[in-house]
Length: 234
Image (cartoon, rainbow, N blue to C red):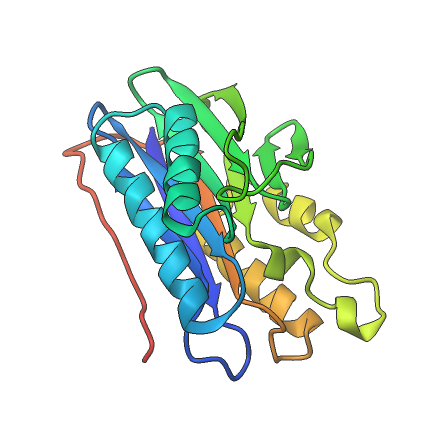
């Protein structure tokens, strides 16, 4: 099998710095984690918050901490650093090869969609953001690591796209339609979802946006070559 990841990111229209950060972390005992952070506000201050939180989470994952522990630790960290006055939403999507498990950890109001061959489901229960409560509990779910499974995470700029124009806004039915295709490429999904969200905002995003996809696919292992492709416009 193979872990495939697709990411698409865009900043709020006419704002130079994005407050959304996404990190890909290799787990020390096998597997990958996607860390998705949305810092409070917009611009440089939000970028600083999200980058600090994502970096802290990546370090803890790299040190071997479990995802639930990581979520509690970064909440304590942000609370201590900003005296409970600054928040961030966080989603971690993990393929843990040691446990042969997919793990979804959320302190976020944005859903995670799980796509399977036999249909899709959605984790959308509201969970408190990190940083503003001294004691904070994440939502942590585990799923079997089967080929053909796709995890889709977003920040709220994607979910709220189109809300200022009085139309139907962003639709999870559109997401379900994309993942219902036969093992779609995660980068293809991420790019199409981002284009869809930007179109809902009439080409001018009203908020920072991140779409991050983690897919498990069948593969003839061969030599086990690993590849990473990044496009970074500036």
